[in-house]
Amino acid sequence: MSIKKIYPKATIGIFGGGQLGRMLAQAAKKIGYNIITLDPIPNSPCAQIADEQIVAAFDDYGAAERLAEQSDVLTYEFENVNADIIEHLEKKGNTVFPSSTVLRITQNRIKEKEFLKKIGISVTDFRAIVRRSHLEEAKEELGLPAMLKTATGGYDGKGQILLNTEEDILDVPQDLFLKELIWERYVPFIKEISVICARGASNELITFPVSENVHRDNILYTSTVPARIPAEVEKKATDIARRISERLEVIGVIGVEMFLCEDGIILVNEIAPRVHNSGHYTIEACYTSQFEQHIRAICGLPLGRTELLSPVAMINILGEGKGQGGDFLVGVEKVLSIPGISLHLYGKERARAGRKMGHLTVLADSVLEAVSRAKKAIEMLSWE
Ligand code: AMP
Image (cartoon, rainbow, N blue to C red; front, side):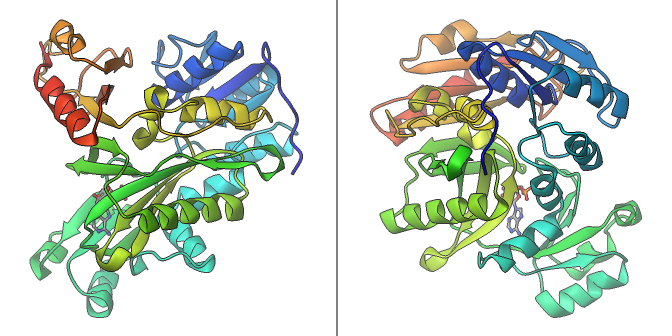
C-alpha cells in the first residue's frame, strides 16, 4: 500500500485526549507537526501539548468532521472510538490510521479471537454469550475457571468477572447481559508478555523487544525489558506480532498482549490498535519511541531503530482516590534523586482510584536493579 507522505508543519488529528494522545503529541511536536485532539473533557492531557482541542463527544459526527477538515491525517489513542464515524470519514476521503477495518476487529473480543484463529494464532478457548443460559452451556463445554468479559468497551479489567464456581455463575449480575459477552477459558499463564509492533509505508515492519508485564487488579503494574524468557520464546512472540500486523494490514503501532504458558506455548490475549502502556519504556530505553514510530508510520516516513539501549523497568503511577484533596503528588523530589529515573505525569486534574496518572521509567545495569528501584520509587510517592 502506498501512503501519502505527510511532512512536518502538517497537522495530525488525534481522537482521544488521554495520556497516550499526550505522548503521541509530544513525539509529533518534537518533529514539528501540529496536533489537534478531540476529547469531551476540556484541557485533556493531550490538549495540554496540542495546538488545539475540539471539545466534543466521541459520537459527534459534526465535531469529527471538523477535526478531519483541519487534519492531514487522523489517528486515535484508544480503541473504543466510534468505528462508524471513522468509516464515515474514510468514505469522505479522509485518511485514518489504523483503518476502520482494523478498529472493528480489535474493538470486539469475539471478532478479534476469530480473526486470530483464522490466521493460525492460538488463543484461549472461548465462546460468545448473549443470554444467561449460555453460561451453563459454556461451563459444560469449556469448564471452570473462566473469565467472563464484555465483548466490547472494556479496558483495564473493566467489565470482567472471574468465575471459579457454580455460585459465581449464579451471581453474574443481570445488567452484564445488556452487552454481548465472551466466556474465556482461564489461562494458567507463567508470565504475561507483550510486543509493540509498527508497520509503515511499503510494508516496513519493526518490533520492539518483548516486554514482561505484571498486572495488579487487572491494571498494568510493571513492565520490564528484556523479558526473562528464552530466546526462542522472544522470537516466537515477535513473529506472532509481525504476522498480526501484516495480516491486519495495519499502518501504525499495535500492542499485542500475550500469555506465556508451560512448554513455551503462547496464547494471544488482546490486540490494541494503538500505542500501548507496556511500550512506554521505549521513550527512554530505545532509539525511537513507540510514539514516534506511530507518528512516522502514519505520516508515511521511514521507521526508526528499536534496539534496547539499557535494561529498563516501567511502573505506573495510579491515583488513590482519597476523595477531598488527594490530587497532589508528594515525594517527587526524593524520587528524582534515584539514578536513571524518569518521571512522566499526565496533567490529570483528579487522582481517582486506579486512574493512570503517570509512570516512572528506570534504566539500570540489570532488569532486577531497574525494577527494584522502580518499586522503591513508587513507595516514595503519595497523593495528598
Ligand atoms: P484484558 O482486559 O483482556 O487485557 O485482561 C486484563 C488482565 O486480566 C490480563 O492482563 C490478565 O492478567 C487477566 N486475564 C484476562 N483474561 C484472562 C484469561 N482468559 N485467563 C487468565 N487471566 C486473564
